[in-house]
Length: 325
Ligand code: SF4
Image (cartoon, rainbow, N blue to C red; front, side, top):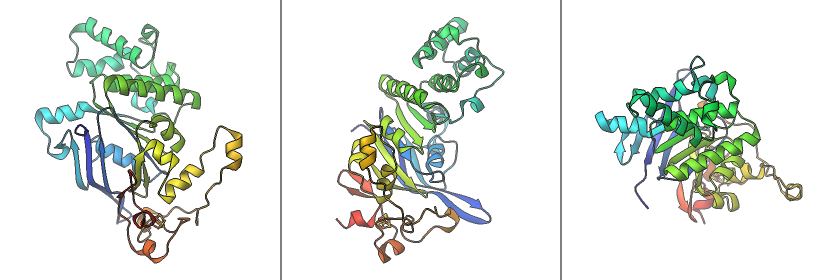
């Protein structure tokens, strides 16, 4: 396989909260390649957004290393740094907050093109703006050019955010809960647009979501990483993760997904947790952080030893049950 676009090596991020240090992300390692989709899923507070922000260079790491095309992003300067800043773009959850309400859609998309000297002259800029709007399925583009963000629907605003991210010809997109604020029907259409762009432009994508059903749909040809309290607990090709989940937490998440077919739902068994309380990052359980809730809790080993993320049957899994097989 070609060299990865993005490599995370033992990345950790700590924060000071109430005079104590918490690990929002703990020892995460991951490679993402050109044209690959990786979804990060987990409950809120599991560290997925923090991971995305570090990867996009908007939040410094506390330990470890992040490489962009093999180079440590903390040491980049000059041309390499600019290539990274333009090469990795982030799409946020709330497009309304990230689009200037006083500017037209044409002005919003033209600004980065002009700022980075990517087009020459007004005519070329306008042509590129139209091209980008068409690329994100805002057609016909002329219907959108003179509109303001408040005149668009949530889904259309998110398409404008995607078009703006594409102005600088990125090679990697971090999409953080990018479709969670729009209706379900629009979500699928937005995901289809992202998939189309990934294929057409060879984009690598880190798609962050709390919704495993969405991750399953979007990353079907890619991989899914499951995070729990700051750690990656399972990373596997999406099909494999859905059909043969190995980590007990992944199994619990999958068992809670409603199925479209009522017959399947009737026979589906929801796996019960030992406890519904999610531990605080300020008071992390010893050993495996999932042990107070884990339905397959093994006893002292789980309470004492932190499981490593080890290769297991084509996936990587952090669980003592799996490492014993
Ligand atoms: Fe459950 Fe133990 Fe595996 Fe943690 S290490 S997920 S507590 S079986």
